[in-house]
Length: 206
Ligand SMILES: [Fe+2]
Ligand SMILES: [Fe+2]
Image 1 (cartoon, rainbow, N blue to C red):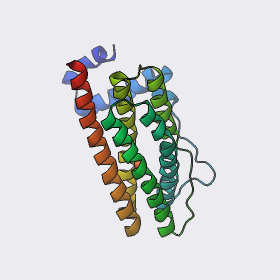
Image 2: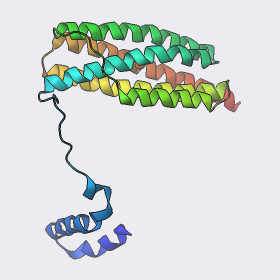
Image 3: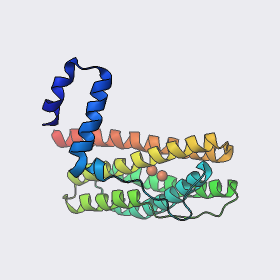
Image 4: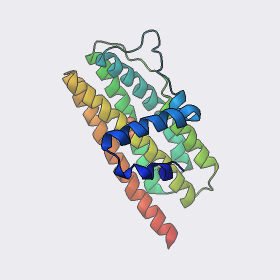
């Protein structure tokens, strides 16, 4: 085991330990993932500036929100708890507003709103569909729907948090305020889902 071979380094200096680790990596790494890792060549038209990366991120989340707006009604239909159904319906309305907000953000940048497929959201939604197929309707499926929805919310929180940070650096004030508004909604939705999950699980445990 790798940990066992590292123990004799106790008496050596920090520099020697560092050198040893590098050598270990080089020798042991022949078959490891780190040795086969390569620098990925940039595609034609790849983002050079932070502004390009910011715009790419907006396109990505624009696609993600639109995909979510299509998926939420299915989640609502499959939920049993009235609280959960209402929360999903409310978030669908919010999501539609968020889509408009992103269009406003593109407009503030003088750009046409454009969607680019978000593989992460596609994966999260596929997983959500899978969870529904693998659970019987009722509190267990509700727990599955909540878990899938929270993964989506966490993804959105991370995305809007990053985009807001980019907007701040780029001094895109209008975008920043639009993105922060959405970020707040995503956080509140996540908190509400946690509350519903607690009630759902407690009732199930009774
Ligand atoms: Fe959203
Ligand atoms: Fe959301």
